[in-house]
Image: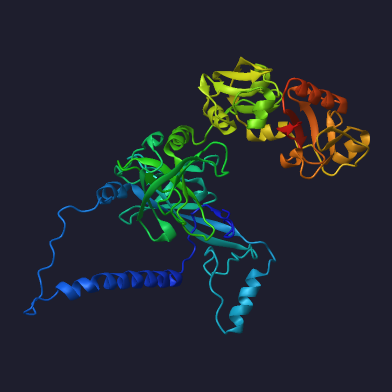
Length: 531
C-alpha cells in the first residue's frame, strides 16, 4: 500500500502508524485556558454584583432551562454498534542496499543501545532472516473504518484501506476482534466489501438516498481517527457533485464534519441514521482536517456493493469513445446554443461506438432520453449500463440532432489501452511553416517530421511547428508538436485544408473553429479563436 505524500493537499485519511500527543496537548491546553479565562472575565461582574446578599449569604443558583440544545446522542447510540474499526497487516518490501537499516544500526550502536526488533517474527529471532538471507521485508499495521450493512456480516470500507493487506481484522464496537474475508474490491470507486463470521446476527445500518441531500443538511461521521477508536463528529453537506480527480465514476459529497486519518471507510449518516456516504478523502495542506472532507455517495456505493456481493468484482459498460467537455467556445464552433453534452474526440476501432456510427466531432446530448450535462456524466452513465444492453444516444452532428443505437460491451482496461496506443513525440524539427490559424504555424507531415515525432507510418494530418506565446491557441493548451487530424469533423491532410476550414467558419459567421489534435496517442478538441 502506498502512502500519500504529506506535502500534497489531497490525502486519503487512512493511515495511523504512530501518533504524537505533544502538539495536541499543547493546543488543548491553550484552548482550555482561553475558554476558562473568557468564562472568568464574563462571569466576574455578575458574581461581584449578585453572589452575596447584604447578610453575606449566597443566592440560590439559577434554574437550568427546561429544554436542552439539539443532540445527536440518540442517533449515535443507535448506529454505533454497526460501525467497526478495520486493522490491516501488510508486508513491506524494502529495497536491498538502500542503507536505511545500516544507518539505524550505526545510530543505536553509537549510543550503546541494542538494535530494535523489526523482524516479521517468522523465524522467532527477530532478524527477518528466516535462514535464507536478508529478504528486506518488514511488517506494518494500519487502521481504518467500516460499517456493517447486513446481519450476515458484510462490511463496507474503502479499497485503499485494505489494498495489499495480508490479514484483515475487524474490531467491533464492543472490542471483539474478528478476522475478515475480502469479498471484492472496486478501485474505480474506492469501495471494498468484507465479511466476518460472528456466529450470530450482527447489528447493521441501512443506506439512505443521497439524492435528497442539500447543501446545509446535517451529516454525522463515525469512525476510527488516528486509531483512537469509535469517534463521532458532526457537520453539514458543504457541496454536492465534487470532482476531486479520483476517477470518472464518482462525484463526491463535500462535508465539513471533521474526518482524519483512520476515518477512511467509515459512514456518514443523515439525521435519520441512514448511510448517505462513505468517508474517503480529505483536502488538507496540514495533514489534518481543515473542514474539507469527501464522501462517496450512497447511490454509487450501493450499486458497487451489489456487484461485489454477487460476483466479487465490478463490470462496467463500454461504448468506446474518448470524450471531453463542451465549453462555450466549442459550443459556438459546432453551432450549439449552450455548452452541454460530451464531445467525441476519438472513436475506438472495433468498439460499439464505431458499429453504431459514432463519428469524431459528435456531441452526445442524451442517453436513453436522459440529458447528459458533461463528459463525466456520460462516463458514469455508460459505466452503469449492463453488457449487451441496447442503448439510444441523441447526438449533435453538422448542426442537427440524430439518434444512434449501440449495444454496450464490457469494459476491458487492458484492451482499451492497447487500442488507444501511445504514438507521438516531442520537439519536431521546424521547417518552413504557414500560419493557417492565428498564432499557429503548421506544416505537412514530412518524413523528417515523422522520424522526429516517432509518428506511425500511416499518421495523417498537419503538424504544429510553433505556437505564439499569448495567443488564444497557447492559452487553450495547443503545443508545438501536436498533430491536427481534423477541423470540426472533417479530416485534414494539408495545411490548405486547415486554412480553408477556417475561411469557411468565418464565412458562416463563426468566431471559433474546432480542431481535433493528437498528442502521444490521445485525441482532444480545442476551439481556436479565429477573430
